[in-house]
Amino acid sequence: MKISGVILLTMMIIVSVAGCSFTGNDRDILFQVQTIGSLQEGVFEGNVTVGELKKYGDFGGWGTFEGLDGEMIILDGVVYQIKGDGKVYLPSNTERTPFASITYFDADKKVPINREVNSAQLQELLDSQLPTKNVFFAIRIDGKFDYIKARAPDKQAKPYPTLAKALEKQNVFEFKDIEGTILALRSPSYIGSVNVPGYHIHFISKDRKSGGHLLDCLIKNVDASYDETAGFMMILSETGAFSQTDLSTDKQSELKKIE
Ligand SMILES: [Zn+2]
Image (cartoon, rainbow, N blue to C red; front, side, top):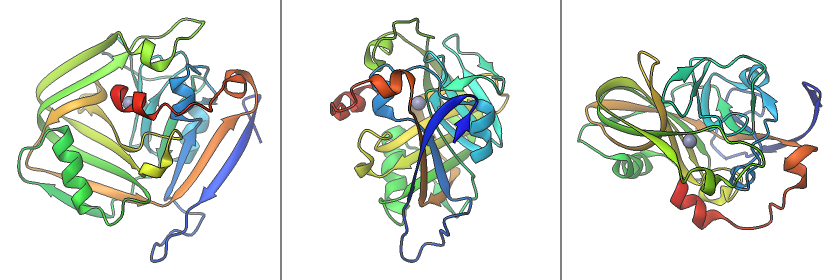
């Protein structure tokens, strides 16, 4: 398989769950570029282009761009880039990502959030309502939020540092009474260093002028919608930094601190 001149290894893992409507060829597939473990090791070289990524869904991001240049959000088919300056950019189709996930969002069910919750409480509340913890869930929350705290990293220069090192300096943005969308990916705990176990949450404002990787929030009187996603497809690079980096070290405790 050749994407924009880079030979890629395509790995397809189909997780079939009894009682799940997943057919192996529908919209409930999470498509992922490389791994959180490789990003942690400083593999910031972009692999898949934005144009290619968009062929696999309309919702997600939960990743970054070449050089760790900001946070990625994909909403209603549009790819947004929140850079270290806190501003939202529209990357061209030729921009590349070293780590991102995308799927099609079709709401299966709503979870009302009637009491005020912060980010940790939101995750607990969602966990109590999801039918299983063993497949992926894409979660969308539209509304007006009391408080949002988000971050975006600065673009890194080569030789690239590790992700933990790069995130020692991060730009944090706080918003009050802001309208927008919270996008969460819940991955099973067994996903290990492939993706972020548990929740990875991003935010973008309704005016599309601010956002980032969600660090905390206070939200109430909104509905969360979830899309159970039992298919998984991953693209890895056979060349470049990804192929040459030692990815055998377990860095999950470090991941808990930085994500
Ligand atoms: Zn993020």
